[in-house]
Image (cartoon, rainbow, N blue to C red; front, side, top):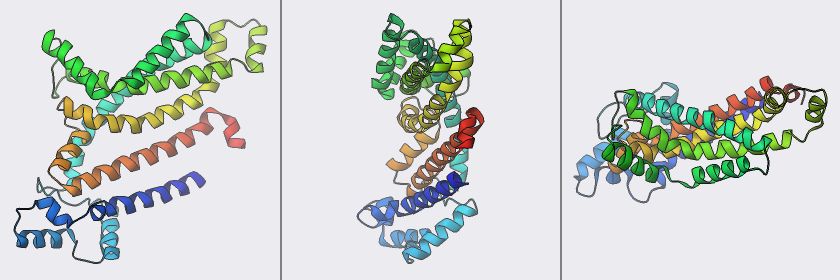
Length: 301
């Protein structure tokens, strides 16, 4: 309940920030959206349409009321409800993030556990190198390299678009290394710390096999930190998806945000920021609740 109350406060602050986005920018928001060459009457009509001619408290009240009704406004560029645009762009983004997170988990966790168990060995050094490289490579640069090699030169995979499972391979590979590097590093450190605990030495003294000790005892207790970083990486993947989707012409939330920002479609930009923040807050709340299911000590505390 305490975590839920904190989440509500954060969500309220997010709504305030998102509402003030178009008011923070110097100049008339309606003029910025339509451009300098727009007629004055068109600017006035847009200000009235968006409710910008009303007092700020009334504007905020209408904004929050619209959120509770599922109304995110209307796109200025597409002249369609923002909910429809976001609803079309959200599934591709979720698919891309899910594929990237799966790669990060399936590769990063085993390598991190392997490195943590073999601390100081060659496996540990290789894992650290992979982690450093993953966190250092920019997704957009890696995406361009993947397109040049596997699409343009070899012709194995398509350069952009959607439609088949082959289309998601390159975007997911470009987006995954950042999350993979962080997951690998946290998995390694967590397993290293757990392996020094007394109950691990007790399990080894009982004659349990190495795989049993690591899989049944060490990994389970190290998984809380791993789950935490996995949840936080969703935010990093959302940020990376903005550029990655643009590079691969992937029709997701990131590309929608970039196109809307270029065309000054602030209702769409504002909605994308709001939904991304809500997703992060909800994900962190789910992670906090999941702690108790994994580690019973959290319940007692």
